[in-house]
Image (cartoon, rainbow, N blue to C red):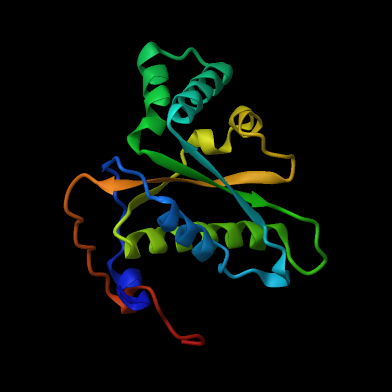
Length: 186
């Protein structure tokens, strides 16, 4: 698949099963991520892979973080939190490592990490690997960040869920470019 085809046909694939991407596929995913735009060549990202029993441990971390938020949490919500990481055989946590820099603001570094996540999605699609970008409130939870070993200058940008698509990929809805582009001044 060429680059333009990948850009125009990529869709989120929320229904995933085994097998996870193999070692060669993973290498390409991470190599693609490392080519993201990076003003100042700060490499403001890092990645955690979670699979096997690590997914259950992440689910337990999610449940504990939900409990710690202070609201009374029902068993259904806790069970849902525990099951979230089980929706794919491999999760990649994309982490922005924000560094003090006189020319590169923090926001730009977070966006660069987001570009790395997007590059991984495109590389997955080009290889026939199903992928979906997920966040949700737990991606921004301090207890989750601590449990995953994030430093004070780091933040979660994405949980990428990766695996084999359970069904045929949907066709993306065509959008009209003119609905999103205008000239300035008008």
